[in-house]
Picture (spheres, rainbow, N blue to C red):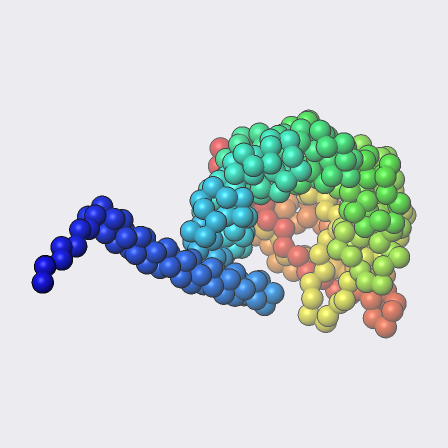
Length: 370
């Protein structure tokens, strides 16, 4: 019997081996992706549950997990990954880690700009959040200016007013505050006045903001008109709004500065009606007249204090003031008694009626070191 020789192609065998290996890797990769997708889905669901439960600690944990897993699943430059990073930045901000939040908002903004375009509506949220989270006031101003430009390009007046308001509320507290920033608040009010009914809460809030700006600028006639409009709208609510109370308080100060105590009285009483008094609660002055510092005492850099007791009548006026104790000299007592007579308070209310109440205060006289 002849011995049969089998011929074989080594290249074919090698190829078959490779295919087997490749198939194993493919199956393994698919299984890995399925596991990752399942892990991501679980983490993201846990994140949503933590947000719903208002659990900031767990929100941060699962936001980080969802972002880390999403970055693998979607890819680092995918827009869904940027959205997950936005969630993480929000969680970091809410947990107090403003540095990390700011860094991540900037990354999100860059991703959104690359994906949607520089002037798209989608970039506004990360742009505003980046502006509000940075500790660099100049950078914040630049970002807000960019956001205003984007809002203008979208031809949406109410959106523009919202951006103006956000810019003003953040920047007025910074050294960058100037005439332009002041006008952001006034422009927002103008837009809302043109496009919303007078009882729309957004417009009322904008009116309050504009009134405060006008008062700070000493445009008292305009401020008065706007604060009265605020009070009119908030009085329709079934609860006392803090801005209504503040509007009354500012009008007390405004009228007293104009020596119009009669009009101030109505607002003192209105505040008294709004405020839930307790027996041990100290009354806070709505308008203060600062005492004069005796010139001879100031020259000698003499300091001191005066404790006084007085009655606040049913209209919020001070009467029957007397000195309980003092330090520094009789001139401090004299100036203190003269000043306290011009203060205004909200009267206390008992069973729906204003009543007289006793109050005490200490006035300090000190000269700051130069």
